[in-house]
Image (cartoon, rainbow, N blue to C red; front, side):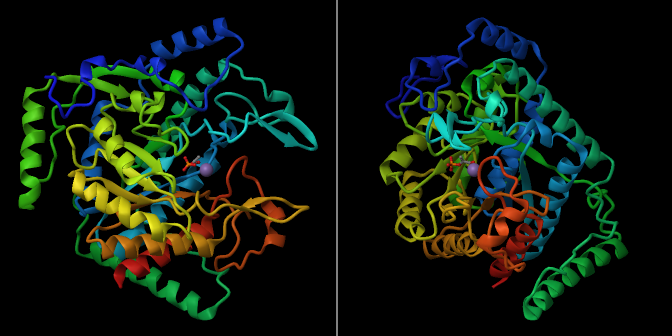
Length: 483
Ligand code: PEP
Ligand code: MN
């Protein structure tokens, strides 16, 4: 088993082997007895998601990696326990569904939807303290650890258990809404375009909406919906796997589902041998694996992706599909080493590379990353996060973190173009958004300016696209996909 290509043998891994590695963004819990009590409780609680669902997503992401589907992932930067309410959940589901319709129209392929929801409660921070109202206090690290209010900044281990219940309640409502027809496309959709100031742009968007509506009507008329596919959709959940104590407590050895082999047959010769390799793994491997049962998909943040660090060690043992955020400081060879560690069998679509370089840096970096991955033989999902490399702070006195719609779209357009130039393709987008009419990012058809941001600036971490900006981004991406 100890082949020279394997960096570590799988037997060395356990849900707690990360504890022997250096960890970034470490949490110091003052009350160890309370922490132990919370972790013991979490270990007894049932899975929030199941291996069957996890493999459904893994197989779908394989399709994305092969160019047969497109991935849309989005949600809040920091999800709060307070967002576990019907309006906030429904508006986000509806927004993701509506965006995915536009993207299906644009790319002419299936869209795989993953919400940054039902567990996105832990935030990496650049400093352990921050200044709020002129006072230096411990940084807000997400509702899973402490509260935003200055008086709630102590770390409370009880919050780990609370995170589980808020995740479970959120996902329960998502499942209930989807099975009750929130995604039923027989109902007319609300495509309010009243905010679009430029009449030409408005006419352009209106044409897209008419085309989508027309297509839906046609499908209904010809009875293309015999399988009830217009009534329901898949919506998977995800969060950053930052707090390893929590993630490990919800990591379980579970039976693999029967049908975890790739569902669709490959007609690409080059990839066929890899498919066979995967199929033989299915028949010879043990019939159980380690699953993170807190979400379908987890990602490693740009700050915790050190190849010899605790987070990478934890992630390499999971059956779940995983993401890795990669920023401008990632070297080409480091990227390949990382892929070899987390995906030694080079399984197609197991890893999603979430690139977040910034509009001015993408041109100098993405091409090199694409070539290095191609040469390594890994087949990944390339997803663009055009948000995190484009954050700026407005001048004093407002000093609000914001992002301009133009830079977000520009990084996305560059990603589409650079992939094409390198014989690759963009597999998906990763966005911070909310279904509410907040004013956190500037620009878009509503023409939001720096001065407008304070009207409804509600984020507790990074600025999100509001509902209209998010739909507009989908229109623009769809437009470029059709070109
Ligand atoms: C995030 O997605 O909110 C985040 C912290 O991203 P990154 O790891 O890319 O900085
Ligand atoms: Mn963020």
